Length: 288
Image (cartoon, rainbow, N blue to C red; front, side):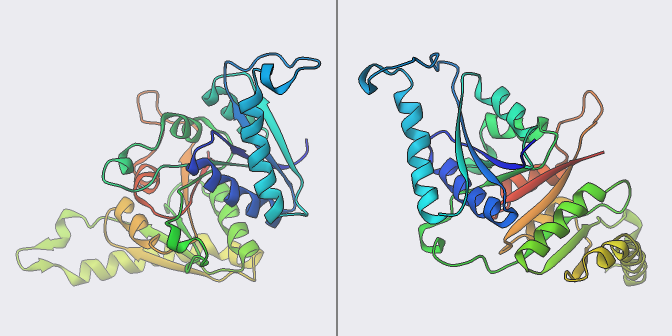
C-alpha cells in the first residue's frame, strides 16, 4: 500500500487549514497527499456529461480548487483527489485506516466553539486506528509567521507508550525543533497542610517522577540522537499541565488507548482537554 497523508475536505476554512498543514507534512515525509471528500449523495460517475448536468460538479470543484491551491505552493508534491459516496464519518474512518496520517479541520477557540469540535472530526479521532491530527485555522495575523515553539507530548509513566513516543520523536526530528515531554501529576491529599503544601513531599514526588521519566526516555535518546527531549514534571492535573505546556507549541501529541472499557468514553481527560483547549495542531496517537 502506497504511504499517504490523507486530509478530509468539506469546503470549510477549517478543512483548508488542515489541507495546508497536511501538504507541509506530506512534503516533509515525501509521500503522497490524498484529498478526500465524502458525501452520501454523490451520483455514479457518468461516462460523458457536461458540467451543467454533472450532479457531482460542486464536489469535484471543491477538490480541484483545493488541489490547485496546494499544488501552487508545493509544486513537487504528488496530490490526488478522492470522492467517496458515503457518510463522511464512515468514509474518513476507513480512509484513515489506509493512511500513515489523517488530518482534519477543527473549529476555533471562541467561548462556544471550544466545546464543539464537530461530530465528524471527534468520531474519526475516537475510532481511527492510526494517528489523526486536528488543525484549527490560524488567526490572519499569524499566518505568515512560523510557530515559535517545538513539539510537546503528554506522557504517562505507567503502561505502554512506544507508539506515542515513536510518533513524537519522529515529528521533532523531521522538523528539527525542541521536544518537551510533559508529565502532569496531581498532589495527593496528604501533601497539603493548613499553611500550604509540604515541600518535602513535593520534592520527593518530583524527584521520583523525574527518575521514571528519564528511564522511559533513555532508549529514545539513543534512537534519536539529534533530538534532546526536555522532561517537565508539573504538579497539577495532567489535563491542565498539557494544555499549559502546549501554549506556543508547533504540535501537541497525546495518546488514546485503542481498547477502553465498554462504558468508558472514547477519549481520556487529557486528550479531551487537548482537543478542546489547545491552540496548536493536536495529534492523537492510538496505542495499546
